[in-house]
Amino acid sequence: MRSLAYFSQIALTLLVAVAAALLCQWLRTPIPWMIGPLLATACMSVGGAPTRSSGHLRNVGQWVIGSALGLYFTADVGQLVLSLWWAILLGIAWALVMGFSFGLWLHWRNAANMPELSAKHMRATSYFASAIGGASEMTLMAERYQARTDLVAASHSLRLVLVVVCLPFGMQWFQAHWGLQVNSNLLPGPRIWLWPGIFYLAMATGAGALFMAFIKRNNPWFMGPLVVSMGVTLAGIQWTAIPSEMSNMAQLFIGISLGVRFERDFLHTAPKWLLSVAVGTFGMLLASIAFGWALAWGTGLHPATLILGTSPGGIAEMAITAKVLELGAPVVTAFQVCRLMAVLLIVGPLYRRLELPD
Image (cartoon, rainbow, N blue to C red):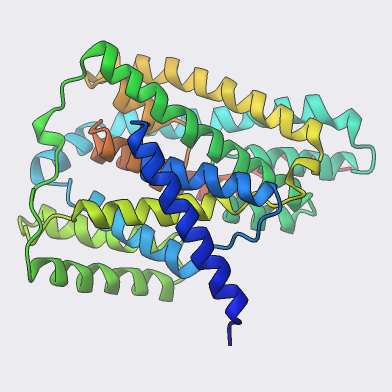
């Protein structure tokens, strides 16, 4: 049984997160329902406040966002994504090269400062800390090769938060100064929410999430609803849209789950390592901007869409940014999903091929 203190901490965290989201909304910051809770809970956690998230709430957030993103995949969008297969493959190769380069940077900057790690363990730590994959998956892989999992987890948390905070502001500036015109073909099929359509969608996507969890797939509460919602939309069935209030709630839960990762001793975890992670992350962001621009020239899509699609952020977070700012969410989702799947499949075997004796 959970204690009263456990639920009180969750309730307090939710109240602070809602207040932060409303403040960011008033300040007109981009993605206020994710960035506000993220920054507020991160600051509280680092300051020692008793913040707490629930895995169930994050699952609900991913469920809603996955379902909402699947609604974008109309038949026209499906044809567009298929026509971009070559660009998606380039995006996968880009993610692998970018992650490997990031790992070389981390190793070069930190190997001399960590004599307690053998050369083999230092290579493993740098490699898995820099792979552009999910934090939990990369940390589990790192554990198999005796890497320092605390540094790996901290690296992914810091990279993700920096990307999630910086990119939306950049995209907002992009829209304001470049007059981005939304392609109506990249907007979701159904535009209003309907009953009982919302119930049908919830049941179908919930079943998809449970099935993905049963077969032990990665990110089941995001991937299951996404696949089901995508299949329903591609079949021409338009049950309902997702209410904006539900989307805001989902962003709130995801923002909280990111913010509580930063515990009080986070900044004391190898500060030079964290500084090199931050510098490397900004370098990857700049490189992704250049690469996204080049892909936009080759595909005819807007640079903002391809920058989000190839940036080193998380699937849900980058897709939320594209959805809220109307920057081609289905294309961004396709790029990010394919990138994550490829990284999870390739990174482990590639490390075994590259691994050198101590």
